[in-house]
Amino acid sequence: MRKLLRRPGLWIAVVLLGAAIVVVVLRARGPAVRTTSAVRRDLEQHVIASGRVWVPARVQVSAQVPGLVVAVGAVVGQRVKAGSLLVQIDDAEAQAAVEQAKAAVEQASAKVEQLRRVGSIVANEGLRQAESNLERALADLERTSQLAAAGAATPSALDDARRAVDIASAQRNAAEAQQIAAAPRGADSRIAWTALRQAEAQLAGANVRLAQTRLVALQDATILERAVEVGDVVQPGRTLLVMAAEGAAEIVFQPDERNLAHLRLGQTARVSPDAFPQQVFDAELHYIAPSIDPERGSVEVRLRVPEAPPSLRPDMTVSVDLTVATRPQALTLTPDALRGATTPTPWVFVVEAGRVVRREVALGIRGDGAVEITSGLEESDEVVLTDGRQLRAGERVRVDHEVR
Image 1 (tube, rainbow, N blue to C red):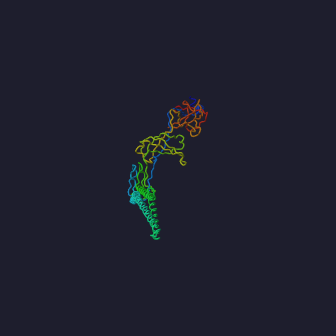
Image 2: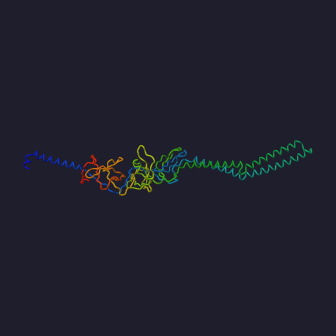
Image 3: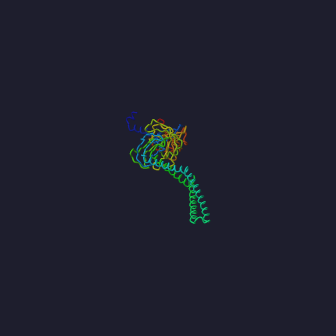
């Protein structure tokens, strides 16, 4: 030892030799690697996204007739019942049109009643009188003809008797035609009934135009927008109010199209409004869009909410946690042990007899901090965790159990 201390060069050579031996031994054993093992656990795959409350029936209330607005019975945010008055347009002119149409109906109805009760009686009486006049004229003609034959009547008197018969016959024909026209199926009756139906149609149209001056809610709804005030002059087609019809609330969101293979109707989700994160409620997937948004690379999905909290409002932003797959007691592996996870052939490094062996694996669903391994691994396999170093298949390694 004293000789070594007197000769430092030799001491240094011994140290270097020992270090070289250690390096050679370590290199022969390979680099230290951290490993993990596949474990069995219940696994769920979720799609987390931001969505909004969707209004299935968004109703735009528009004016159908022009006019001056004299009353507005709804404000933004108000819940209205079916039949509630929303907007009242000045109806003075429409009311006058209704009264005029009612008078026309009464007049036409009176004409029909007159024909039914009086017209046929007058026509029948006129026909009997015309027939009686014709019989008298024929009798006068026969008597005058006999007197003319006996030389007791002049030719002019005979001509007068013949003209009287022609006139009486014409009057009889006219009376008969009048009787036919006054009958229930006659021309006069048809004209009167046609005039009555026309007047009734005009009254119905006037009532419709009157009703169009009152805009009412057809169903229970919430007012979303209001674009009308008292004193506005509105035109047909102008949107005055926008309402959300009451009904089952729905949530719409657009997950990435890569999730499309996992989406199924009937899947359940947990939803919470961003404004009230403590209010969590259930929803069910009931619609998947048939096409993909080419600009966003996403697919529209809608959730039905059976029991929505009172705080839920149209167009409100919500957070969606959709459960798309469940695997009880699945064989799982931590994601940082996978290599080539996004490629068609993912693989891992497994330690076998002190060396790393490349082994391809098949992946299933992905959960919170775990990936399902459907084939390629056993629970007892030691899988090398990735740490940025490049390992080669067949390379000797040593497992660092202290940091495993």
